[in-house]
Amino acid sequence: MIAQDTVVALASPSGTGAIAVIRVSGNEAWDIVAPLFKSVRNKALKKQRGHTIHLGHIVDEKRILDQVLISLFKGPNSYTGEDVVEISCHGSPYIQQEIIQLLLRRGCRTADAGEFTLRAFLNGKLDLSQAEAVADLIASDNQASHQIAMQQMRGGFSNEIKKLRDELMNFASLIELELDFAEEDVEFADRSQFKALVNRIEHVLKRLIDSFASGNVIKNGIPVAIVGEPNVGKSTLLNALLNEERAIVSDIAGTTRDTIEDEITIGGIGFRFIDTAGIRDTKDVVETIGIQKTFEKMGQAQVVIYLVEAPSAFQASPPEGESLSGILIELQKIKNKYPQKPLLIVMNKVDQLASEETEQLKKQLSVISSKVEKSQTLLLSAKTGQGVEELQSQLLGLVNTGALRNNETIVTNTRHYDALLKALEEIQKVQFGLEEGLSGDLLAIDIRQALYHLGEITGEITSDDLLGNIFTNFCIGK
Image (cartoon, rainbow, N blue to C red; front, side, top):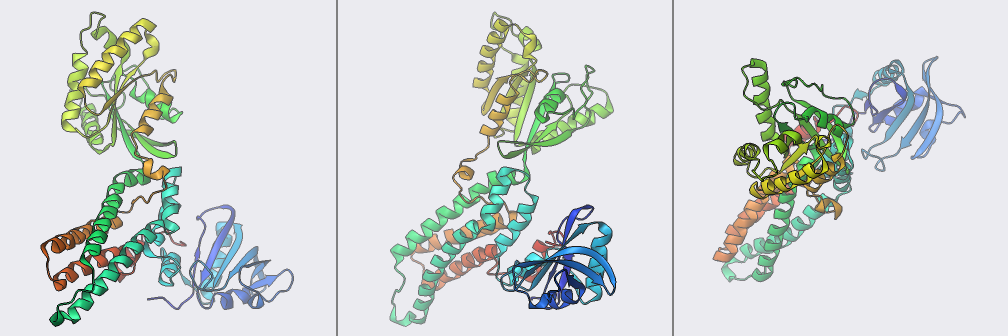
C-alpha cells in the first residue's frame, strides 16, 4: 500500500507569510533536491547527515529562486519514516509555487490530502488513532481540545486499547488451543480468570464510551443558547460575554430576527454562544421564522440560559410574596421539552433595582429553582458587567472536566466511539457465554469479533476504504 514515488506539498498554511515550509518525502527526496541546492559553504547535500540544517539557495539552472534553509531527515528517523527534506523559504506565494513546480518537474508528485501522515501510519511511525489525533491537534483552538489531542497523539488511548486487546488475545489463544484438543475435554484457559478479565474489559469499555459525551462537546465547543422574551438583554449579554459589539442592541422589540453565534474560551473550554430571537406572539413573518429557529437552537444546545428582565420580574412579584407564575410556566415548558438539559435562569438589569428589591428577588428565584429540575439561578447586569464572571463560572461548572484534570483517556472520535460500542456488545456476549457454560468454539466467535473491533481503533485491522475516508479529511501537506 505504500507508494514508492516521492511526494511534495506545502506543509505550512497557504498564503503570504514570513516563511513557508515545503516538505518532500520518499526514497528519492535527497536525490531530487540535492542538484537544486547550492550551499553557501559549498557542501554536497547528499553527503550530509540526517537531522542537520543547511543554508543556501534553490537554483533553477542559473536562476536563483530563493535563499532557503534545508532540513534533512534520514528514514526511518523522520515523520513519515522515509527520507524527508523540508525547505524553509520566504513566504511569497510566487516563490512557494516556483519551488514546488521545479520539484514536480524533477520527479516529485503532488502529495494527496493527508499523505504524509498516511505514510507515517503505513511505515509504523503512528498507529491509526494517533494519526487521527494529528488532525485534531491541528484543529484544536482551546486548552481542553489541545490536551485531549496531545494525550491521544502520544499514545494514551492506543496503549489502553492495545493492553486490553493483548490480554484478550492471550485468552483467545488458549480457547483456540482447547478446540484442537476437543476430544480430550481439557481446559487451558482458567474460566474464573477469564471471567475477571472480561468483566474488567467491560468496565473499561463503558468508561471510555461514557467519556465520549463530554469529549465530543469539548472537541467541538459547548453550544449555549441564550433565550427569553424580546428586550430582556440577550444581545447585550452576548456582547458582554464576547467582550465585543457582536450583536445589534436596540430598545425596539424583535431586533434580533436570526440567530447570532460566536465562540469564546472559558477556563480552557470552548463555548459557542447562540443569541436567539425573542420569544413572543407575533404576526411578523420574518420574526416568526426567527422564533422557530430559537426553538431549534434550544434543541441543539447543551445548556440553555433563560434570560429575564429583573425590574419587570420584581413588579410581577411584589413583597407580599406572589410567585413569578408567568416565568415559571415558560420554564416548565422548556423543561418538559428538554428534561435533561441544564437550565440557567438569569435575571438581567439588576443595576436598575434597589438593594432591598434585589434581595427580595433572590428569594423568589430560589423558589423557582426548587420547582425546576436541573436549574441554577443568577442575578447580573449585562450592561455593567456585574455577575458576568459568575455566569462564566457556573457554565464551566456544568462541564464534566474531572477526567480532563485527572489526565484520563477521553474519547472524542465518532469512529472510535462506534468501534467501542461494537466491542462492548461482543464482550457482553462472551460474558453471557461464560455464565451459561457455552463451549469454547462459540466463545471463540465472539472473542474474535471483539478483537476485530478493538483492532479497528488502532489500525491493526484496516481497509483501503477506511484509510481513504480518514485521510482525505486531512489538509494537503499534512
